[in-house]
Image 1 (cartoon, rainbow, N blue to C red):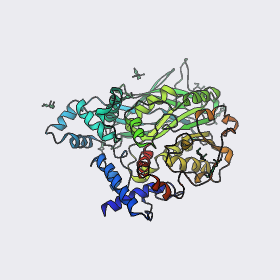
Image 2: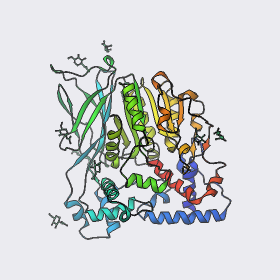
Image 3: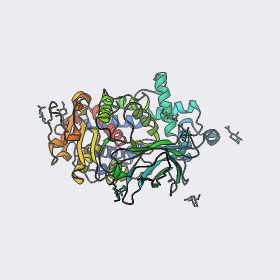
Image 4: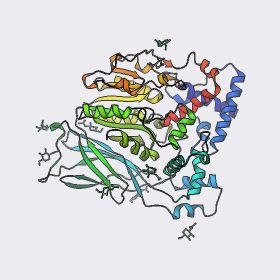
Length: 489
Ligand SMILES: *[C@@H]1O[C@H](CO)[C@@H](O)[C@H](O)[C@H]1NC(C)=O
Ligand SMILES: *[C@@H]1O[C@H](CO)[C@@H](O)[C@H](O)[C@H]1NC(C)=O
Ligand SMILES: *[C@@H]1O[C@H](CO)[C@@H](O)[C@H](O)[C@H]1NC(C)=O
Ligand SMILES: *[C@@H]1O[C@H](CO)[C@@H](O)[C@H](O)[C@H]1NC(C)=O
Ligand SMILES: *[C@@H]1O[C@H](CO)[C@@H](O)[C@H](O)[C@H]1NC(C)=O
Ligand SMILES: *[C@@H]1O[C@H](CO)[C@@H](O)[C@H](O)[C@H]1NC(C)=O
Ligand SMILES: *[C@@H]1O[C@H](CO)[C@@H](O)[C@H](O)[C@H]1NC(C)=O
Ligand SMILES: *[C@@H]1O[C@H](CO)[C@@H](O)[C@H](O)[C@H]1NC(C)=O
Ligand SMILES: *[C@@H]1O[C@H](CO)[C@@H](O)[C@H](O)[C@H]1NC(C)=O
């Protein structure tokens, strides 16, 4: 019975992709399957995966919700219990972990601000307050295996990969600080203003508030009003009481171009559809750019000097530092969003991307957006065309990497039905970064005529649904888990 329900839940996840605009993707009815052998074989494979995930994480399947990456531990109790589950119940485990806790850190994400009706710059300040517990190195190594759910174990990794795996593990096993206030200093040439955010951090340590900046005027300078410039003005922000919360605030004028970019498999090589590789690329390998994409972005930044770059990933907040470090080493500076911890319920987890996109669209109703992503993200395939329909005139171009065109191992079905009804000149499926070369989207040009566009609206990459399941159980199971990963990315 239990295994059956696990199966139906898994299929619920897998088949949610083909189903256009399902009301609740995670509780879609299980399909009727006709082959017992197929079921048993799959059941067996799923069980071995579930077992390899370990009891603490198998809940994501049992509950039918892809919680693996959503239910990363939050708070001291959770960290202690997670560590105990790996090292056994050591009497002084709390001491070991908490005695050596490092000072408070603030993750402060690069922010954007808009010019308001009240003739002020308002900035959305967001991030997380937490401490790193003193988890001994040897325990971290043991814990790394839990996150490294690929076939490779920590001990088999190369030294550099081990470092990265330990860093990721340590980043996840942090203790968030609830109900504290955050004070931010904004430095501009003319002087500093210090603003204490009106609220307290959430139970998960998150903060996210709009603050209104004063226009400090001295002989050395002042802020330009949003209606008097096309240029983006930047201010350095600094969370007081720590050296870990420095970031840039981008004051973005009401009009101009904003490039909103996903990160995994567009800016960085992740290969999430290839399960083992995806896990290794996310937890063990240092992040590397996807082909010559940095060149394309550098070109955009110089061709459109006033462009605003916004990086929007649904990767969990805990590993945002690694993403930011990677992005800012290879791509133009810009504001940043990752999946906030406070959205823990199913709907919000599933719609995190749309939630973050809605906020930036609402903040800049007159700007033109260029949306960049890849077809392996179910939520992108839904949200990008949806935004183009909800905000006519706001979406300049949708540029999607067709991940299947260059990679035979891509077995991940994707759904293009959301694009039905959009003008074909508004979007392009591209194969390599070079396909984007020479596009002048400021002039409304979103399509490179040299790139074949063969778009039919509906599910791609599976013919007749069941056929692909038969073609390889493992690939199918991997696709289910990749779906889980895709929720994360
Ligand atoms: C933790 O700190 C307490 C109080 O300072 C001390 O008694 C205890 O021995 C420490 N435990 C460990 C494991 O270091
Ligand atoms: C992990 O690496 C990132 C990027 O290099 C760094 O900012 C962060 O502090 C590291 N985290 C830990 C827990 O060591
Ligand atoms: C949060 O902190 C404030 C002041 O520090 C206190 O008044 C309030 O009761 C706290 N709220 C909760 C839910 O702990
Ligand atoms: C700030 O003040 C200066 C002069 O004092 C003024 O020219 C400028 O428009 C003001 N900027 C904003 C954002 O209000
Ligand atoms: C900006 O808007 C304010 C308020 O409507 C107006 O007084 C001012 O002249 C405008 N500035 C420019 C450069 O258009
Ligand atoms: C953060 O900003 C503060 C204030 O400008 C500065 O003193 C400090 O050195 C900065 N820290 C880092 C790590 O850059
Ligand atoms: C500025 O952003 C806020 C928050 O998204 C939004 O409610 C407001 O309408 C924006 N202001 C303008 C003038 O667009
Ligand atoms: C993606 O690439 C594959 C393989 O080249 C092709 O069959 C498919 O039509 C492309 N999809 C889109 C939406 O362009
Ligand atoms: C276009 O796509 C359809 C359906 O996805 C496929 O049957 C056909 O072979 C493709 N044509 C080309 C030229 O790729």
